[in-house]
Length: 147
Length: 81
Image (cartoon, rainbow over all chains, first blue to last red; front, side, top):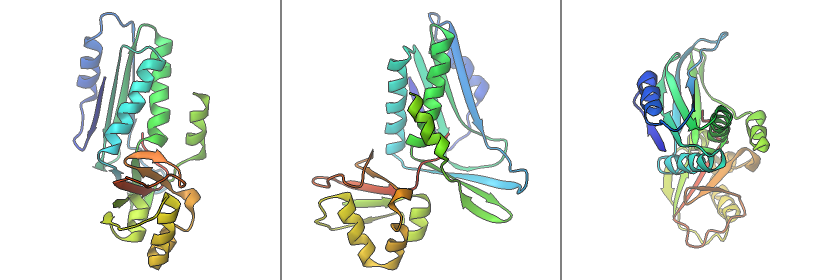
């Protein structure tokens, strides 16, 4: 299991391949990647991601540990960036390894649902019209109820 | 103790962290003390339903006790992923 909170970009292909390579006993690998999306009506110049050093690493480690136990994962990876990103850049990725695909998919969804509203990151979108903090959605909080 | 502010809470209060001497027994009492100091605190803390709090880097509630606590952080709902 590995958790990385970093400003630097990551190489999705290399991270995915390295994660998959280590698991001869795992039949399923799922990866999810989040990308900075442009806004159709208000072109975005950048996204700034703030976080809470110390708590962020602890929260992600806790979420990943829960996923490992709950879905019998053989391994889990969480990479999440902070700082200034532009549209098209990769924000974060999760990867899960399990014996079977259902646990790998569900483990990845659980990781995503929890890190969206329980890991201390805050996004701010900057466009020609100014900067605005991204508001949390009620549905993100509601998504936790299914677990 | 150290009190930290993130995202728009940091912007409204105008600083990322500060040392606070307090005898507040709970987070809610600390919020009341800070809000009584200056308007910028009162504005930032005007709607607690829009805020989250972490005590010693763990998410908790506004009625959490502060005895022995080193660090309290206030921030809006998180938007990771």
